[in-house]
Image 1 (tube, helix red, strand yellow):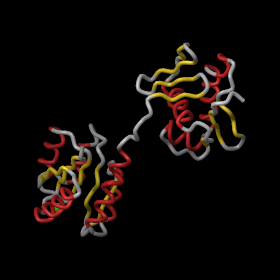
Image 2 (cartoon, helix red, strand yellow):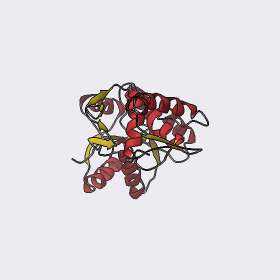
Image 3 (cartoon, rainbow, N blue to C red):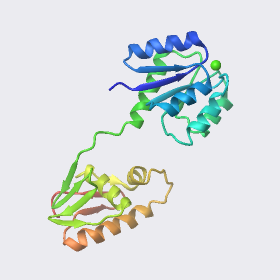
Length: 227
Ligand code: CA
């Protein structure tokens, strides 16, 4: 299904031009010419991405963004006036994903749209991940070893999933932090080690296997072979 884009822009000629270009690329486009109408549309139907002008009648773009972010994490690309640095900073602070400076080349806008949509589209997940006798059902969020179910916390599950998805590939502590905890840490990677210990306690220790291997100074790897 093609992505649904809401374009909130009061310059009707520009809006029409962008709409045509986006439609040509296969997107479904809905237009709003002022902020109030934009918010109405956003609360009435789902969109995959919002292109949001800042200088808008009724309710300006910053306020639209502020209100939108109370309830929605839909990707938003702000359309800002040239050199309006404070607008860009304020927009990003309020939760915009990106901004494009007017006047923009349509190719640039299209590239930004593709990037924003890609970031928000979860990669196709494998349903079942395995290593040795460990089996993870990603959709049901269950883990079994042989026939025995294993209770994991959400964090432990996500950590194991990340390692299973990268089976036979060493995953660094930083990558694990980024993927499982969704943060960039400058040195707080001890957290990872702690949770690896929890996982080993529930898997390696209980079932007498060597599942999670430490690669000293680098990170961790799960291997299919038990050595
Ligand atoms: Ca405007």
